[in-house]
Image 1 (cartoon, rainbow, N blue to C red):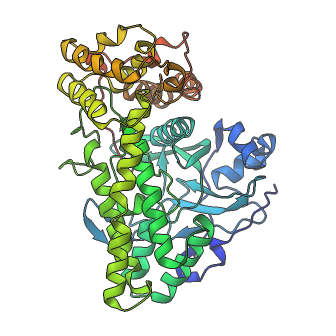
Image 2 (spheres, rainbow, N blue to C red):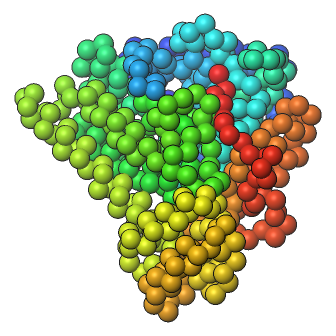
Image 3 (cartoon, one colour):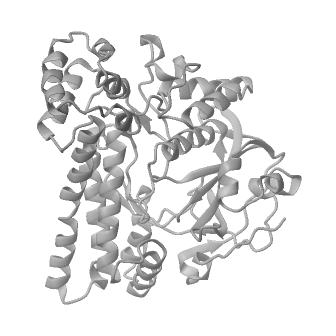
Length: 475
């Protein structure tokens, strides 16, 4: 099997990673291949689905040209710093250049133990792997920067968590796997030479217009401000915004305890491990800024000037986060409402009414697309529509006779990965070996902005007995 690899990260100094092959699995079987993504990468889906392709995607065969490595990084996890984390169950096979010239990592997740496994088995369960496939591909369809999922393979082995579960391997695609925690790893060791090398590598790979380490910091601040705003605009809660889960590229990474909210609640927490609500929906901008402060700390020693100049420059860069976030988020809300200009009073007024009555986030905004054409069924999202009606009077006046429904439908999805639908698909696949609900859900979520009359259940919020109150980390 041949893939045209060009492994730039593996050409960095050896202390950036550990070289080791994936650990073979017992009986690899291809469960899902993302053929559209394969073609985007310039890979042949038929080759990937062949016996050699399946063996390579499972980690049983190292393709020619691959240089498998596990990457080193550190990170703050729920506020506590771990100076050494690293890829504990993932192997970066290598990098490919897409036909459009973009460089992408090919990583196997669940590919066995590494020097950073911390006594773990280095494996992944089928449920979390399928969950990452569903949500990462849904995020891509929503237009949100994200890592992608190329393939899911059953390993033919059980992994042991609370109970034995079927094992699996995910092939993850990313612009890169460089994280805030990658910089923290070298800063914690006082390795300024490595920081300079890493900063220049990350700048050249992701933010070519930036100048030096300070320009890189400013570019990452801007990218993360825009990313978190996009999360908020679709009701997404990441759930585990640790610094090792914040990429320098500005892509969303790690789909463990994450979820899309149903009823709007700014304080919502859907992660089973976020006991204090650190990463609640409304806290996400603040926590992104906190993470970026940690990146600035890691880069501080290699910024230009003396210590005072370095500190001033870092603070100035970090101060760019709030206005960038608010421009993207508040401007995005007004666009979702079809308004000709940004109107924070109107957008915040709607959110206040929604929060008071726990109106469904997705269906309210989608329903407003119809309301812009005179269909007021969106009132049904509110137990007491009086508050909505009062708000809607001002909204219609602000529309000033315009007809923005088409543009609104391009911004307000009809379909998101509803937690109960995701759990239904995972239960069928893991417990019954039935992949049909998973395939159907992936199919629906690939067209989130289109009307799909044949998928009414996928658009609806859960009944009381279907509600999912917590999501879990796959480790």
